[in-house]
Length: 135
Image 1 (cartoon, rainbow, N blue to C red):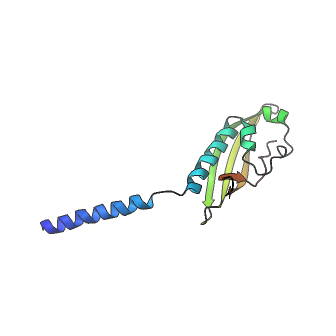
Image 2 (image 1 turned 30 degrees about the horizontal axis):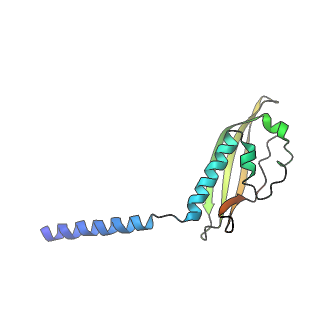
Image 3 (image 1 turned 90 degrees about the vertical axis):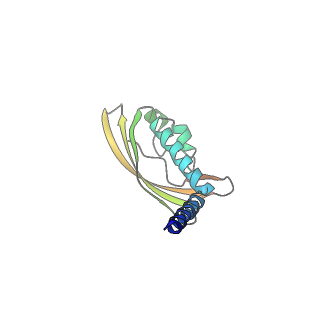
C-alpha cells in the first residue's frame, strides 16, 4: 500500500512537471497579448494616435477627421472572438466597440473584424484592417 502511494505521488510530480514545461508561451503569443491590450487601452482612452500606429497602413483615420475623433468617447471595448493561426503569425479578432458621440448625444455600437499579422523583421503585431469608422 505504501508503495502505491509513492508511485502515485511521483506520477503527480511527473504530470505537474510536464504541465509546467508545456505552459511556456512563444514570444509571438505574448507580444500579441501585449499589442492587443495596448491597442484596446489606446482606443478606450482616446489615444487615437497611439492606436493608429498599430495599423499597417498609417494613412488617415478612415474618413474620420481628427476633429470628429475629439467628439468620440469609447464606453466599451469587448473582444467577442479571438482566433490565432497555428503558425502564430496571423490572428483575427471580432471586437464590439460602444462609443458616445458628443455632437449627436448618442451612444452607438460598431463591430470591427480585426486582422492582426506578425512582422518578423520588426518583431511586433500590426493590424491590416482599417481604423474603426466612428460616425
